[in-house]
Image (cartoon, rainbow, N blue to C red; front, top):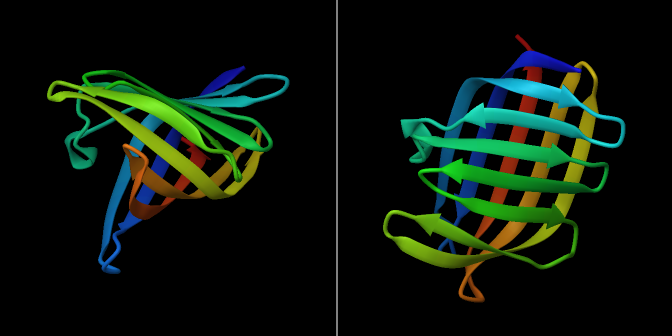
Length: 140
């Protein structure tokens, strides 16, 4: 089953100096309901700096897999306490991005809900920032 939804994305990045940077995006997307998982698919915008990129999220009870395709490409898995490495491909080159999630909360039903991710972001195995990503899905 699939349905049109509103996707609200709020991301906060805090660097080592304690400086926080937050972006918020509200966009239309598609919500797919499968027996063991949910999928959310939406197009990025200029606000996120990823215009021309489609983001797909596979949501399982304890794991979220992000897959970006298009102008920027990345596949990253978020599972509490599990190191995950992905190759972030852009027009400017490729970077190895790593995440160590400290929180992966999934509260989704067939009607929508939310995802809350907290993780350390690394580039080349060096910590860049502490990040929070909240994603809310509501029926359109």
